[in-house]
Image 1 (cartoon, rainbow, N blue to C red):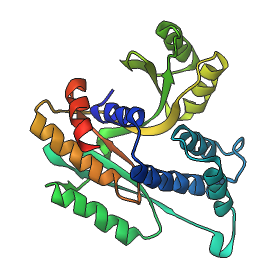
Image 2: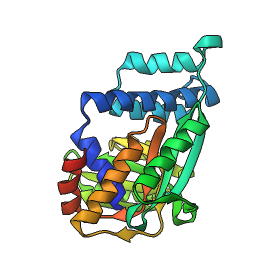
Image 3: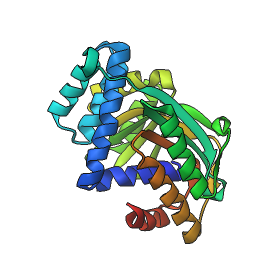
Image 4: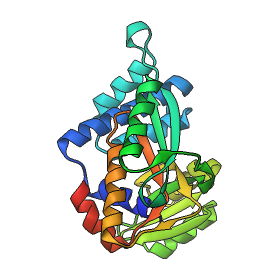
Length: 252
């Protein structure tokens, strides 16, 4: 698992404070609104919406907020909201490659804010997408299950890779088109996923072992993720787990 993926997992487990949780709910609502506008309000027929709702529930977003977001998406006139999906690529501290996925109602504002974060961190926007590939990522908490059983079930269901970044969970990697089929197959065998989403996974990694550089990278990532329009940030840094946990506690 990449350093950034491990960092994201630590953040989910630790939880966010009230201020950041409010910002997270805003981001989750935008994803729900966009998914519902594109594919309709039926979660059974709209897989993207179902993933967005599942993610919102996993982050303790109130059911009323989720319902309101879907209603806003399918409303009209002043109640209708539309966001444009945009992505930016660049190089951050320590030559870390980064892809920033955003949803915005003002492309110029979003571009300016993201460019500013890169610039202040000594980085710049540039083409790095070739260093990533889209994958499905499923996190399955073991909850007492035999990890070998979960691994075999995932492989039988069509997973392309299985890893165990910590003793309490299995992370299953799939091809994008197989994400839902693998998640459903695991659920049918009693292995419910904590999260299932599409992700941009790095094909090359930048190893970072010293504390000063690692902290610079994590602060840079935090500043990007704190931007209101930013939905996800993908990066190719790899920091040892022990150092990651130590520094994550300082920047979150």
